[in-house]
Length: 302
Image (cartoon, rainbow, N blue to C red; front, side, top):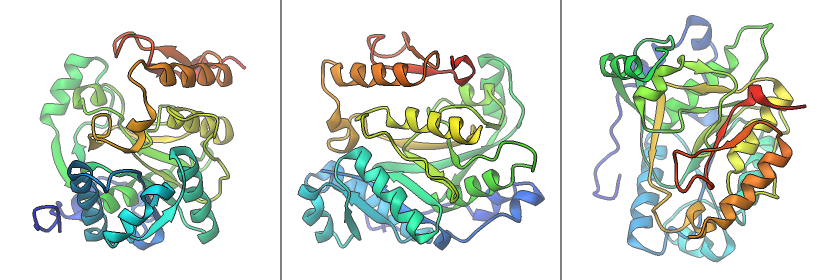
């Protein structure tokens, strides 16, 4: 149950799975096939964080998962007092890598989830790219929103990934559209193979040894996406699936790695631009123009 004592509610999984091709449906697995890792820290000591933790746990359990919470050592006792299954993972990037390593030992795909996602949605509509924002907005308005469970979303992403036809680059990383703007999402096709995979909710399949770079303390998911693209030639981003999270303002978690001046953001951007020449440009439309980036894999200079 959620913070208010109410059971989690989702649309039937069959509505989402009906959006898969027959070949993709044959790749569907049960929720228990995943190692489910919630990456968290310092959320269990105050009311806003507690509300988020309870909400994520309730939705994962209601959809068939047995999540493991990867937290820092200082927070572990507080999380265990909530009855959660806890592993000490350290800070953000080491925790992510420990979760990947644990999944690899189990021989399972790794689903990583942020600790303050409030809901998951899929927009059933035109699969083709709208081409521009005006047309994208119209396509989004005509689509049907499906309120999906987190594990249905994970099963869907894995089936999509494993259903990529033979002869094409086989992705090992799948995720969701990184923003909440549905019109922007419909500008692109339903699925793309070289776009940024958000760290808030992703699946890494078995058969890869890709890990997060411990030199990064922020923007580690941008680097992780590039690592997969360089290794496997493709990722799978579902541009019709969305998560809603509040971590940039919610105390604790990844936001505690940021500083008000943006110096840490800029330091991590320097690492990204050095590792992946040509791929990352500063995004002048967000923040002060020096702390956010856009990613274009096609511009990579080798």
